[in-house]
Amino acid sequence: MSELPPITYTLEYPYTRTTGPVVGAFLTALRDGRILGSRCGDRVICPPLEFDPDTAEPVAQDLVEVGPGGTVKSWTWIAEPTRKHPFQQPFAFALIVLDGADTALSHAVKARGIDAMSTGMRVRAQWREERASAVTDVYFVPEADAVDTYVPPGEGEVELTEHLISLDFKEAIHPFRERFARGLIAGKFIGQKSPVSGKVYIPSKGYDPLARVAMTEADDVELPPVGIVAGYTVITPVQYYGQKETEPYIRASILLDGADQPLGQQDIKNIPHDEFRSGMRLRAVFRPESERKIVEMDNRWGSTGGVIDHWEPTGEPDAPPEKYLEHLF
Image (tube, rainbow, N blue to C red; front, side):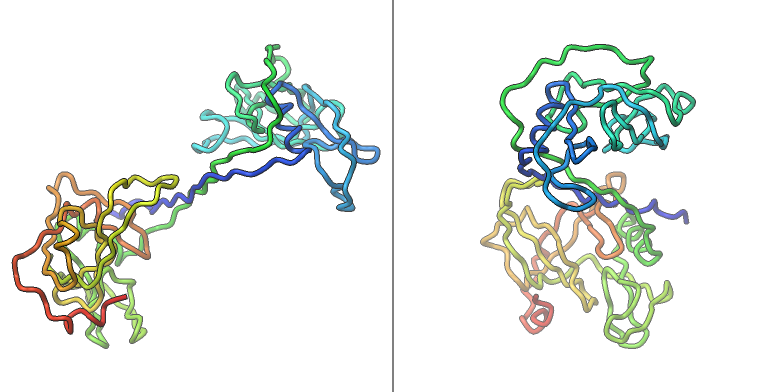
């Protein structure tokens, strides 16, 4: 049995902030094809700051133009860019001291290859055709590859800036979670029965949280695809970044027969809201085997959305409240 690939998480959200007089002027200049630094004592700092980095004292808003040429003080080659990098081809991040500045600006250098990069090399700023009033409006190339372009000035001052904050990270899936996932692909619900308390957990965390004992593959049990609605919520979607739902739907916890823990976060979209109720007996209807896939699976929760097509009433009488009341939350 081959291992499932690592779990990839993406934490992402849009972020909007006001720029203030210094950052706003810096971003406005970038939009218009210029780079600004700020005078701080006998130094020129780029990018400009509103305070002295040595003393934290406020500095006068004395902005001066620097660059567009500069010298690379140090650099690192990015051989495998991610989707959030400024280029989707190998490039360098470099510390660049622009002409007229005394501090280094960290920025991207678009070079033909790693052999084109060296400490002490000269680079020159280039502006993108489509600019967003952001630091990514500009990038650098080796001076010999630079071209002069006309950058038409925009309108007004940049007072707001928007960024898509994103973090991707991975972790290996635990063996007990992998068995749960493979069970779903096979059309089965695989839980674990505690060797101490006898309680059955699905999806399991790999241990009995009450008896505080680890569980192994020998403790795996298969549960039937039928159970009781232990509780539910009618969700009216709030539109936010990444929201795909537009119509109200039900999210339910279903206590599978033989389980001591409900299977939570089950989406119900085919049963009228006014007919849905706690105590209902439901059956999982799996997607055709060729269409089953694991989505949003992690080591804390196991989504069934890519495997279960829907839940349907079994037609059996409702379960009495004492069967599910202790599982309400």
